[in-house]
Image (cartoon, helix red, strand yellow):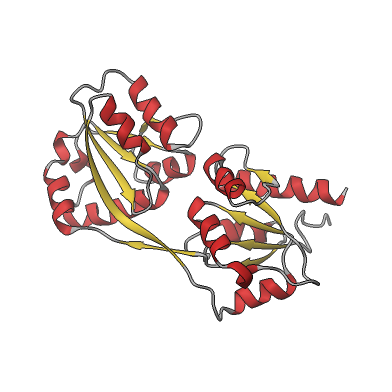
Length: 264
């Protein structure tokens, strides 16, 4: 019987399993021991008046733009409370920042009509602009509290009419007193996987709470995509590997290759 490729490897993920979209499962299927370091929490946060205004205008939007998988989930959680038929979206076209986000959109049996090759806010704005003139085109951008303004700015420069609907918030978790943090300091890990810039910032912000001890294993740092990698480098952390295309499977594939190379 062939041994599992990550057997004997200890991998830290930076969200709880409920928030990580199956990352723990993918790792355990390959034999890894998984340590959850809940560096960030994601929860619904919606201004009711803004939600009501956007839903009343829903039929007038040309594009519905999602910048994260969480945005898709929290948007449709609210949408389904107000409407009992997905066709109530009307003829709006859907754009997504990347494949992970697009997969969640497709789970609602919706077609993604615009998706950039690189999953960044800048590339998503450029991809939308390339679809044709945005002069007076109405766009609803579904966001979280930490979304960057660059995409909205580029769309407005292209003369689009842009509304924003925040549907969730991302908050850093204080791991003071956390048994997971103590475990990480004592034993370390073979790798730490980052799926967002906010997780990187929280990791760095924890300081000594997440600094492996003298006898602990020093981890590799893995990134899901270019923006997360940029955040790691800005924090002074080496990017040991990056997913070939932003997605959980490719992140785990990159991890497996990096550890195999390290052990060669």
